[in-house]
Image (tube, rainbow, N blue to C red; front, side, top):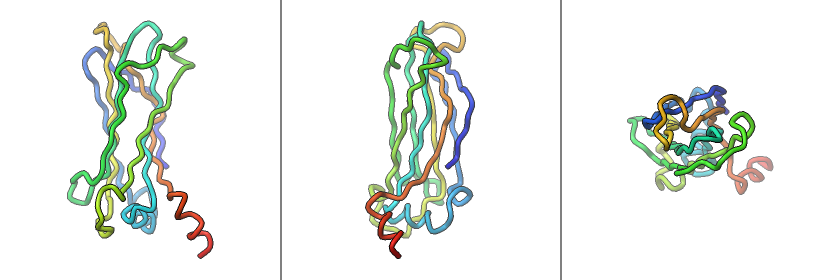
Length: 155
């Protein structure tokens, strides 16, 4: 798991930040094959908040890339309007994307090499300053699917 704790505040213009991670630096080789076979998933997510007096929108896009940089599988989650929160410091919401290689290809020889996450947002009232969506605790996590855990444990 990779975890980045920071606060990224967006503005009245759509503001975006991207991270890329080489999967072989994070996961052991056998897990990369497990991803390619569709037996494991990658979860990308973040915590999102907004000021109580400003409406904001936010989105998270995640993708798994092949060795040549092409998207193998990708997905997005967006919030056109973040829920009103009583306090910016206390009311963070968690949003995530599950990327499953079994949806990408029936060819398990295509090994994923990179995971990319892009977070973006903006202030919907167009106030000058950083009044848009705020992101923190961006993470990447790999998990073996439940139906494949017990066969692994018994072998």
